[in-house]
Image (cartoon, rainbow, N blue to C red; front, side, top):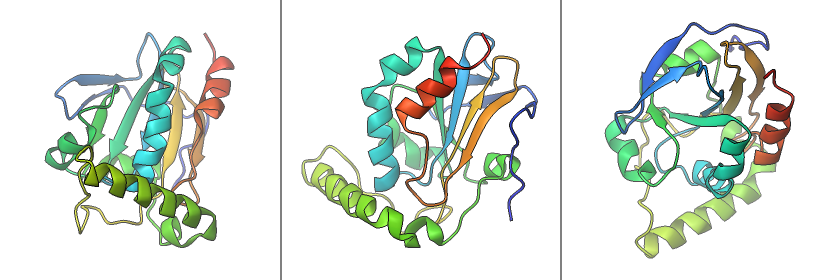
Length: 188
């Protein structure tokens, strides 16, 4: 059972390294951080969600939010799946950050009936992208497994966790609209 990161918790300042080699300071003294925990490199369900974030990335940045996305895959796997993303991606194959933030894995990630339609849509879009040569197939046996649950954290400039969401299934995360509303209520 996870130990959830509570609203108001204060994070220890740290510097993570994106798969691009870019250092990422958390907290960011200039902007809020939307720290997303996703599943594995090439995950069709994760990619479906990240497409919505990419489409509205300019709005997110205009709201003073920096996207940072964590996967439990090794950096060498992530690079080929995430090079096109306009925000930093962090490899956490040892799930150190997942444990610290209380992000779980559970079979309900894929077995919850609320996610089945999304899984079918995500697989169809992923297959289409692979056939067209635009996407790469995920590993047959993804590092860290297939049952990861998503989680979202909005982190203030001072390191306080302003809001947190732990997904109940693989596609249970904040929408961009929800993120923008949370950011609009964050301390300036």
